Every structure is written in structure tokens, then in C-alpha cells.
Length: 417
Image (cartoon, rainbow, N blue to C red):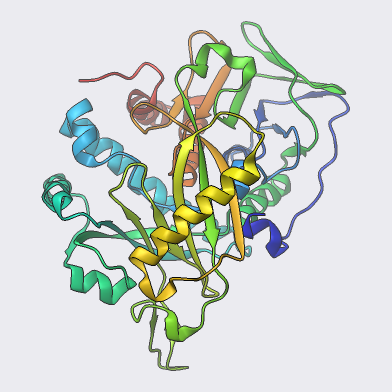
């Protein structure tokens, strides 16, 4: 049971599609990516129909820890070796802008999303990786990326994590992913989008100027279809080989008493003498681990990723991952050794070879626009994808120029330098 689903997030039930509809855009997928797409397109005056096969804001969205970070899953130095420094700087700048704009857009919705702007720290536990982390920090600074080097003592004061060194990055954020998805969907519906649950897309028929998406009980004819399912489903067999499917795991503690929280997480305020300062953290291990504190005093620890094999046997996999994550927690937060989680869950996500999402069109599928393969940075990539796809659809002069530049960064046909 993900923490977010048990917090009774405000949701509404959408009806099942029945009959025929006409729209400008039909979106397949009712997770965070589809929700943001629906909102941005509807707000622009575009007729939107969204189809979700089950219930909105579930699946990988509900399993997310919702870290709004502009750092991608690959280090700056790794991407620079693959694409070159100028291109890598453009990738990081695009994600940084998307993080800032996503936080601002969520705030503009004026709905309960638990939005909290916070810092992130990228740390290493291994002495032999300090030099590589320092090179990463130097490469970021030379490219004009924000960041500050933290000594072990400074990191410990801030987070209670015992490590060798870390990079501090400002301008990130975190949210409740279910509440946030529901907020975008409600705002999209208020702007005219039509949203349908339990309306699985059974097939897409594309012609020169239109697409038709068929469900068991209805059809939608539109100019374009946006596939926002997170990864290539069975209907897109030609794309499946571009993704590695991963299972990831999260444990969430009880609401921890102030006395066991790191001093940097709880600090004084004028009003009450104490307030929470939230920080996200992730390490240099591969696959990496990450930690985030919630406003009500819980600590979430995630990672222990494995290659996905089957939907069956999740209970056993979660039990094994719980042991690994609690062992890791005891290593980085010794005062929490022996803590047992109140929540634990498994999530499924798609990883691409370079850790970047695929956004845009594919020559094999006319009339389709894709937003797939977000990795561990899903919400930031979701917003970036939604905005790029809107620009591509509108094909305005400035939008077209910007979208083409970004499309070269995140397109299916991107390559090494």
C-alpha cells in the first residue's frame, strides 16, 4: 500500500467512455503525465479527451516518491561523455527550468498537493568515489549549474547522514503525487477536458489527418493521440526494446518524534521555536538509493531496484527489498536502526539507455506523440514532455523553434555526439 493512497487524497470518479466523441487531442494514460498534458492542452483552448484503462492517479504515479528534481538519472559527466558538454548543459538547463515551472504551476492550481520546495543532496558513502563526485561537481560548476560542495560534517548537520562528501542543489521540490495528479485532472476538467476511467484503449487507427482510438464501449476521433503510459505497452511492440523495465521499492517510517530527527531537519522558528526543513537525498550507488522527509515527520527510503520479470510474486520481492532498505537506513541514519516501516510498496518504471525520456513523434507511428521512459525523475520529465508536446502541436513560430531544439535532445533518434 503506497503511503499516498492511504492518505485519503481528494479524488473524483470519472465515467466510462460510451459512444463516439470528437476532439483535437486524445490522451492515453491517466497518471501524472497524462494529467499534466490534459491541463496544459485544455488551458490552451484545445479540445481534450483523456482515457485511463483503470483509475486515474494509480500505477507508477501512486508508487512514486514524487521528487521534483532537475538532476537526471545520469551524472553530468556521464552525459557529457555521451553527448558532449554543450548538449548536456542544454539537457540540464531544460530540466532545471521544467522543475521551476512545474513547482510554480502546481502552486497556481491552489489545491492541496503538499508542495514543498526544498534542497537536494547527492552524496557518497564510499571514500573511493569522493574524487569522482568532486569531478562531477566541477563539471556542473563549469557549465553554470547551481550547487555547493558539502563536507561530511556539513552534510551530517543538515541531514544526519554519515557520508564522505556531497553536492547540495537548491531549487527542487516534492509533492504528494496522487493529490497532485488529481489536482491537475480537476483543473483540466474545469478547463473543458473530458476524462474517462475504465476506458482502455484497444487500438489506434491513424490516417493522414486524424487518429481514431477505440475502447470496448466507444471511439474518439482526434487530430493526434498522446501516449502517456510511462513505457511502451504491448500495442507498441516496435518500441519495447528501447526500455528496460525496473521494479523499485520504498519504505515509509512512522511519524518520527522530533528527538530522533536530524537537527538540520528540525530547526527553530520565531513562532513556535521549531519547524521542519525538508531535504531530499540520493547517493552515488548504482542503482541509487534516495531518502526524503515528509512534512509530518516520516522518512521515506527508496531504491533496491531490480530488473522486472513478472507481476506475480510482489509480496516476496517487497519483503526482500524491505530488509535491504532497512539495512541501508541503519547505515546512513544509525539512530533509526530497528525502525520498522508503516508502509512499503513496489513500483514499476522504464529506464532508457541514457536515462533520458523519449518525447515527441516516431516515424513508425503517424499521428502519435509519445512521452515515455521518465526513469526516476518522472514528474519533472512529465512536465517537460507536456510542454514540449503542446508546443509541437500548436506549431507556433517561437514554440516550433524551441520545441525542435528540445526535440533533438529527447527524440527517439537522438544519438551520441
